Length: 165
Image (cartoon, rainbow, N blue to C red; front, top):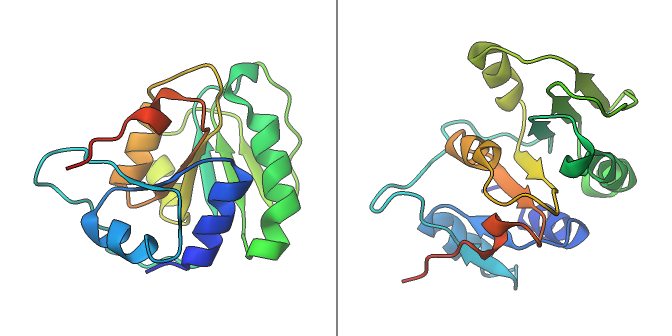
């Protein structure tokens, strides 16, 4: 399992719950993380990652617009990267917002093919969405289905989507 301290700290920084997609994740992380939710995506189906990744990279992919709160994602990442051992932040997509790339923030200003995006996702541990105005995010579910841990804004619809047994 990935380091629960990193995940717990990221959840606090992004002011979000730790959202687990499998019972094994929930059981493991509930020992150290107080604000945790088990999200059931498909009944009887557990998503598992076949590759253990440890570099702490984060990806955002989607429209590069003000509503997505991408500048906040970048600022939080830059402030927390060394403390949490985060490697890189990938921002992928097209849009009108101007963003500045750095050695640890890679901006890819184009729509990628599924194969190209998959290569970047395979380098990452987390998928992030910090919008305060939009609800349901396919981007987050695509990240989860690729074995990434979701980091979401506490004000979006996904935060409230909790199917407990």
